[in-house]
Length: 361
Image 1: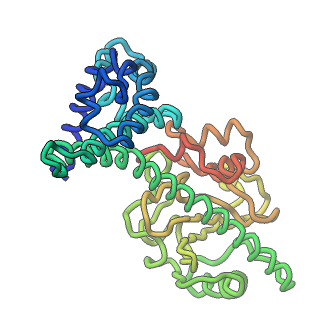
Image 2: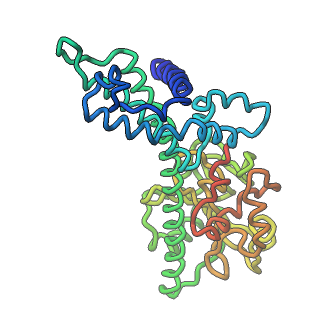
Image 3: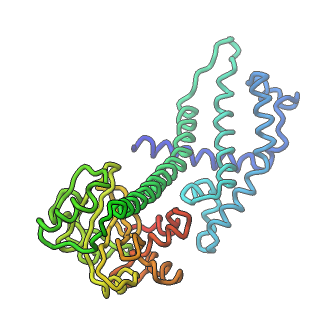
């Protein structure tokens, strides 16, 4: 890692020097003309053709890169950092169009270095890479990878949670529907004791769920990473660590890797904490879409639904869009912060809003 870091810093310094050394005259360079014969002789015809084309494109970029930098760092106190736009922008998130410009510059310099190898000296021997050329080329590759790979991984993790969450919601809907087909009305409460909870689960949900493990008010089917947190970083309401969320809970580990935690709540509290208006007790289900993996935060990878007299509904069902959005953000207030995020995800086409996904707890 230390070697990669030094290589990266060396590469950035070289790119800055090269860019500003040639920014004023780069558009006038033509490797095929006799005026540049000393330079031209060092490259093969194919290398000269490539470099001429790239010089034509690259000549327009130095000024635009500075403009991009100043746009991304508008504060006057930071504007001096645009003297070295590569190093300033490398830590900024650029738009796809701006990133392609930056990538084109990196690619050009990589080809400039590689083209020098496709030459011969006066003795007719092929010249190998120098250490500087190798380090710069590897540095360019490392910089591009450092920019793209974290974003790709982050987007993939977000997509997996979105897909699994939608699947889990469908599984619970089908389980409730199949219970109706069995001519058995789903009992919306179960005793806090293990015997009563086990009888309830085996009667209503077990026949219609594919699960690998079931736990009755004990650890083993919920994450063991400490407290479950709300979207603001606070301890979740009624959290019981690795046992689940609530008292006398049933936790289930599904075959797709998700964890479920089921707990009973009275009608008044269903409205107060979960934004669902009912006249009878209901069963709240916490869906941990990525199982034991972090962050274990309600609103990011854990979402709240409820089995009610009106069917399976997300928390926040009977509130306004404004209330839902206020509940599902970093500075949300109340002990139930983040509980309505599933409604916001549904309203967003089953995609987790970017501002929510970027919240760091």
